[in-house]
Length: 205
Image (cartoon, rainbow, N blue to C red; front, side, top):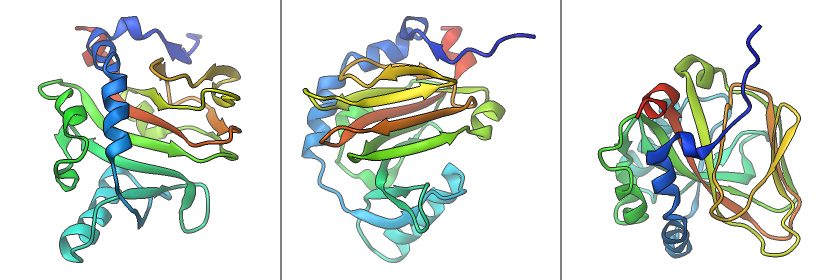
């Protein structure tokens, strides 16, 4: 039986590694981001279904684009929110001029499924789960921490029992089709840049 691999070294993905080296610029753009939490949640929905609801909120209702509520609580998890930037290789049009330089980093980069900012509030736990769509797409996930506490940084990802700490500028590549959970037991929010990508495309370049 072939043992499934929990984590991957970023060195195996040189194009993504180059993007991750720009983490300070991405962080600075994030600091300038001023966007509301919107009444759209990710509970039991695909990326495309969430996009459809966001489109209705912004285009049909004429409201501002912002952070989507995560799953994990009835009605949406305010402790875990996401601000989408790219979906299926295409820039999400609602961002306008926000996070422009970050989005530009992915220009002409093939194999990108989704890019987003993920924010996890203090005393928040994302309980053990796995993503069947990640297995179906033969994809991997990358978390690039851009804003973590300098002291008492109790932010961790655990994939199949193995922990990694979230530290600014240090990417974590993992297989989200496997059991994993994340937690923030720090005194401040943790924000990462999320990149979902086709494994084969990047490992062959």
